[in-house]
Length: 319
Image 1: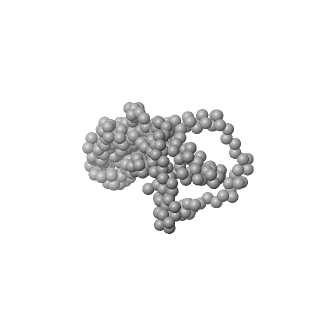
Image 2 (image 1 turned 60 degrees about the vertical axis):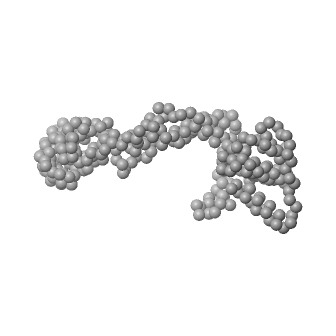
Image 3 (image 1 turned 180 degrees about the vertical axis):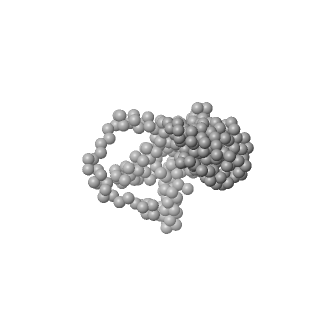
């Protein structure tokens, strides 16, 4: 129930129980088109009642009663000068701002999502909604930069020894142990299990996810190409594979299945996010327009004044 209306009913019940005079009855009369009530000079329209009924989930009759109650109380407050109270003025501004924001959101929700919008938002959530198959690997790399031909030659020789040492090994741990046991001839060797990677190089790690909207991390494509062209089942291994980092020996350890949510289902799941993105674009335009037309001035010593206002903690009750 509307809080103001509930308090009003309670007060009215107390008055009646104590023998206080009842309020004058409502007069039945013809009003202007679209009006269902009038309180003093304040009209109450059918559209306003419809909005209250929908928002508060009450009948039309109950919504009209609540609108009349609010109008009576508002007029009483105005007669007592509350409309000039600074706190009330701030609250009124907040209500008006909320009304404009709701209008922006309603406008954003008027038309269906476009294919471009759905594709853009899906790309943000591709790990959950549009994830192709991915492959997890373990590798050992003999490090050598492209710019050092002599080191590259030595690194390839080390990688060939690693390829022999890891043959027939099952599991990432056994592969890593065998690779690290190879004499490296002064070449740095790194052996580690890597995250799942898609055929186009995207890292499809379901645990260490990037922040929503952040660029999708990718593997170096020489590595990815070797994984997808040479390895087909867990346990498959490559010979030495060149990349800008050096020479790799790679073993496939797991095939992560694809997860593709049908487009119609995605459209429903992502509708709110698409509408919010539209609304933000329109709100940014609106703010630019308002700031261009309406001057905003800030007291030069505002920081000093604001510094005296304590920031309430989350535990503090609202006042």
